[in-house]
Image 1 (cartoon, rainbow, N blue to C red):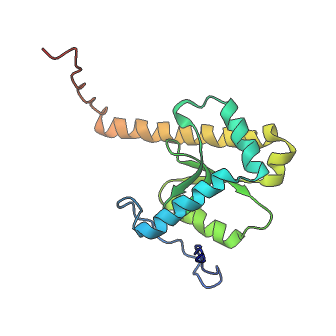
Image 2 (cartoon, rainbow, N blue to C red; image 1 turned 180 degrees about the vertical axis):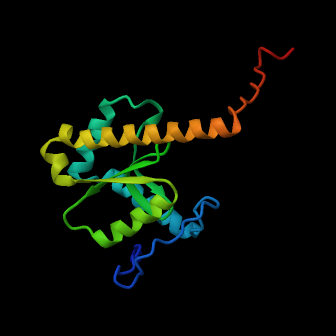
Length: 176
């Protein structure tokens, strides 16, 4: 059997403190298809073998009805795998484990902020101790992001007018 290759991250001391520019272009934001496939495989593996903090927070999210602002787990965004993300809000929840690299996490947060995704970090110990206490900053961040999006939408509408609705496509029973 052949040795399975894994993704190797560069040492943060070798990398500059500048956040790399992420360009939304194509399926992988200018990431090779091979690397993107490896990221999706890694995210799938993380969903299958989640930590206790991930499981607890996912179970708590499952009890809530967020409507269109629901969170998905271990989602690939750019070259990062985010613990939980709500794309309509542009909000990501990162669970800080004890053994993670903080310099790499801060660099990734800068890259995500450059494309409009705010990252909220919550320690795993807080989630395991009391999930309800961990939900309070999440609810606060969700409300703040919703207000920011509404303010931006209103400013856009006042400047350019309301967005015209697209005409409805004809349905089968409408056609004659």
